[in-house]
Length: 153
Image (cartoon, rainbow, N blue to C red; front, side, top):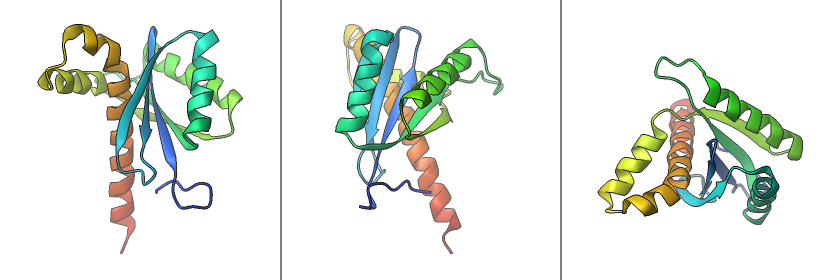
């Protein structure tokens, strides 16, 4: 299933990696093929919600995918509850569709990618959350593309 919006057949999806200290944001291209990191923002209500609302409006977002951190055995812990609480708060602020997506290993993948790219430790701390958001969003985009290809005769 590829989301569509605005009657143009094109859409953008916002990926959000919720952390207790920082929130990573990523955006898809209009064809829902590629995810790109856009920002890491402090997890502070006063500045966080206006920033997310501005990103959703400016980038014409039709769907939001929020990372759901699960344990290795698939169960949910305190971090998953935090993501669910965040999703519920966002749902009160928008009519845009919100989906939770398994984000296991996204931060590890993001960090390994940044290390392989030669990004220094201080800079990695500044961008890791937005890169993790891009990894989780890319996973969601790829899963949707694979599902659509399988359902096409």
